[in-house]
Image 1 (cartoon, rainbow, N blue to C red):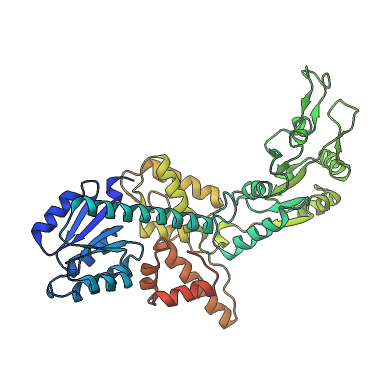
Image 2 (image 1 turned 90 degrees about the vertical axis):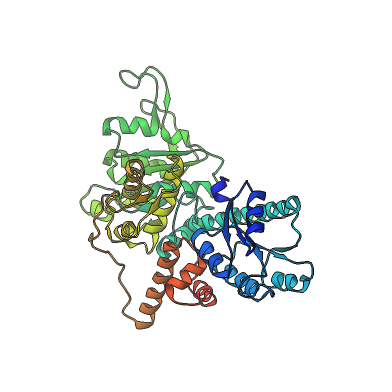
Length: 454
């Protein structure tokens, strides 16, 4: 980690010793405080991972009352921080009291720079390891499936469905607006399914001209048409033993629909210009943003094919209907793009967060990705504003329908408030509790009640 991340707060009322300790830790960004109030100001502003705390602080420097009180308040503000209390030779009882109150360790004066340095370094290494573990747990909580960032009840329910379907051989139909993540879910089905060792092959049926789509899908034999100078395998054969995703299957021409139906029924194909039937073992996942029921009524999509590809259907909600997901996805994407552009200090302003929430997101997650990436590239400060995202603050908030039942409405509002607080504070429990005006135990109880994770 950079030196700016290795912050050490030294709380010591003796200016000479305070200065000496600063010189002992040149590998750290040292912060200093001479009393409890100054220490709390530094903790609130910098959140140092390590605190060296002298128990004898003014106005009661002869006793440990101020130091122990400071310890309790520091632990309340940053429970992850490692506090090492520094005591005199005759204060072992107070040192043990401090450890019982949550101090990481204690050190008795006089100060030996080498020994104290080892103690601080050990404490910091433990802090870094715990932070890494917390980040891993947090990422697992917001990425229930590989590549899928979600915390809303709507998307978590879909992720649970994917987990149930994945170990089967069932054909799956994914429905949803453009940009909602249909290919991500298809890949997740493949990666946690029985065919993970096989290939994942995706074909966009709307991106290939009708005249070429059949040969792209089924392959062709040498001499099948002008320019066919060799045998070429199609996407179906390339997906042997794995998963074939047919994106925008609603745009498949009627003639090809019949041929695809035969493959799904008999699990054999014929290449263009060939007569040999070739068995292929592949799982088929289809996706479309179009209304297949309407296409069937208009005679543009075969009903029998629809029943074949939709053994299980998953309807993916648009981003505007996913409670709390916009800000969650935005934060994860901002971290990703900031690392890519080597700009780790970028943050979203409150106005930007408000604009992100109120925008209707017609382009869904794809639009969110584009706006954030553009903002990271073009922004010249450390703050991403609504203007950087090219969003208006009065974009019109789209809120999921609130249930009329009063108890359900209360629970819906309570859950949303919890999600918003966690997002705004980046899952900091103390700050979330303060924002909501409740105690930390109450916050933990409500998180458990609503099935939310930190």
